[in-house]
Image (cartoon, one colour):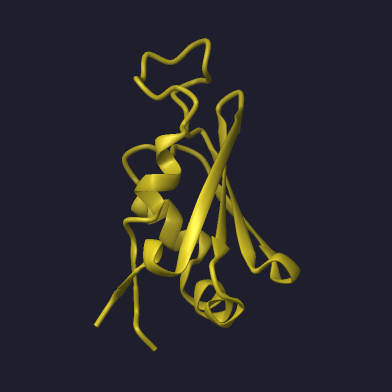
Length: 104
């Protein structure tokens, strides 16, 4: 049975221009390997297929139990150019936490 990402991790976002940054941090150290195994850049890009026009790059931070995703072309041109209601992309963290991970 799949596990909602939000059940084992929390997330924070940041932005610069048309780039959004999402850090996903495991609540428990024992859940980090599952995050690293199943939360890939390709999976995040597919999850945001309608929003992200550029590359998604993943950085692993095992010492923090976290993954950091940099989403290029994610903010409709950037805060000062976008007509989006959430031009900073703060809701992207919550949207990512809706993703289900395999239970293994």
